Amino acid sequence: MNIKKYTVSCDESIYEAWPDVALTMGGKLICVFAECEHHLNREMARIAIVESLDRGRTWSQKRYLTEPSDGKIFYNCPRISRLSDGRLAIICDRIFENENKRADIHIWLGDAEGESFCEFLHLDFCGIVPDRLIELTSGRLIVAAQFKSSESGKQEQYLWYSDDGGKTWSERVTVAKHPDLNLCEASIIEADDGALVAFLRENSRIGHDILKVISYDGGESWSEIFNTPMDCGHRPVATRLLGGRVLVTYRYIPTGAHNVFGALLRADELTVTERRRQSARIFPIDYDRNSSPDLGYTGSVQFPDGEIYVVNYIKDDKEKAHIRGYSFYPSDLELPPIGTDTRNVF
Image (cartoon, rainbow, N blue to C red; front, top):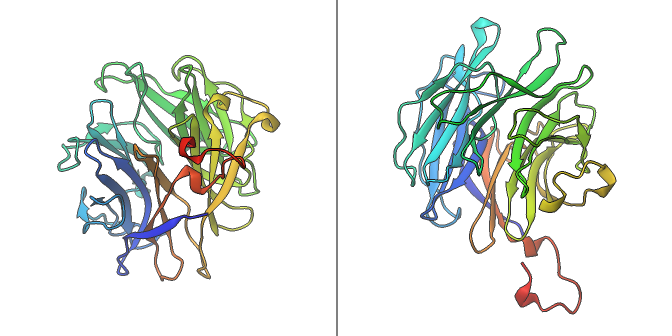
């Protein structure tokens, strides 16, 4: 494989983690992430933005979307997406440690090149680690997040949808829950037939597959839970690729958080429910050599010429976590059949 690595941000004075990335209509990469004292200490937590004009080879200095926190109320896990009109949307959960870990969600809308973002839109949804703000082909907006059930004590995945551009939102919809499973960190993707597939982390830390559920009515109701061939997966992030593929990046964690993996899926198999009938080409993206590794929250985009760019946080040879980028083409992961004219591949 030919995966190239780049430093997106490395500030050794602070912990940088939980990144995501978007590609603007003008070809700029915008990466958002959170910085704080530590994963378990959210003092000084705030949302940072960096950008790249050369496809992620070099990155700007940080600028900040929010002010530093006192650790009692803090922004947690930002995501970024590009809407159909080109505007960028940053979404992030805000956690209240002094209120039994209650949370709400904020959205900032920005211009097409990420030069400026408006005052946040406050969504009084009780949920953490939101998926990107999703815009379906129908125009429906979806916000998905998780929270622990007060009844079962298990993590459950929810969503809310809006059909008027975010002016009003639906009641909470349960995407996935199970009395024996901790279901969280959904990544929702729209299939060619309009079905929605939500890939899920199971957080019991015993090596469950990445799971999935399916909706055929725009997210208003969801199927039973199905397995996928991506074993031991945490925090899946699904991205549609050119040529009928889907990339899922995730933390591979059979016993410890040492690796980040990717899987190439077929878009026409997104709604297949039998595990053995779902094809997946699984490959390593990075390995954390640190004696106390910490990595595996990712984001990804694809350029029009096919190049894929992934962002991830990792400690590796540093004391604190930092943001790393990776670039590769699909042809770096899979050779064409012997004798194939490679000019027409990918």
